[in-house]
Length: 266
Image 1 (cartoon, rainbow, N blue to C red):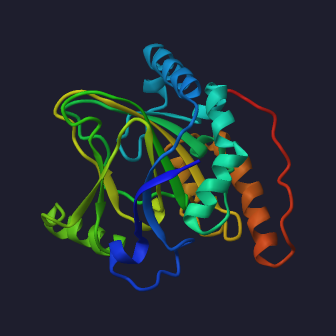
Image 2: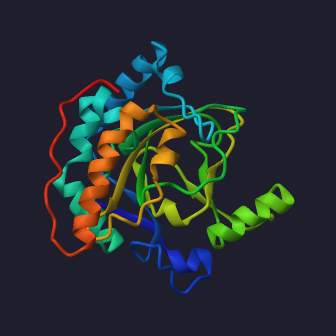
């Protein structure tokens, strides 16, 4: 299902032989995904429609300054179809070397990001969840969609450099191209990253969020971090149930099903 174009280990990127916070040896992989074109086209069409009706503004990420739609799978059924596709999850798990599952906190589980010319698209950050898949839906302009920028060093070092110098050293950021037809699986929780500023054109990217089924507690999305983006009532109950699930799993009780919640608008 996936044709890998580029792949790097986490240790190769950060220079650390072992990272106890990592869920996988994978840093990132870029590949031709072969997802159904009509499915992705329908997602793009709905994303544009929602943005035109100001849902984008109401869902803007307050934490990182990112222009995006949160909980995209609840607004666009085709996103949910792709998110739970068993063949996709199996292929990505094989690529990561660990079983991956969709992220259980609705508001943080899927996004559609809008990158526009001349805007600083997103601050340097590490993700809350362990893994993300970045799927460009549309690109235009001379940069052909631009790139994700990844600090080549431990994320803690990158944060320190940003605090001291205000910028990362030249030549210390890897560029991961973002192209339609390709996707990137990235262990964003353990990589400090940002996005290239576009001089012209735009990129619209679907982001599907995942975690390790075996080690779900390796997660940086504390309730406090979630509240930087979302109202308490939108995340509290799911977060609490998942904490209970993680505690039971960590104690060796085995996997069990978190009760499903009724669907509601994001």
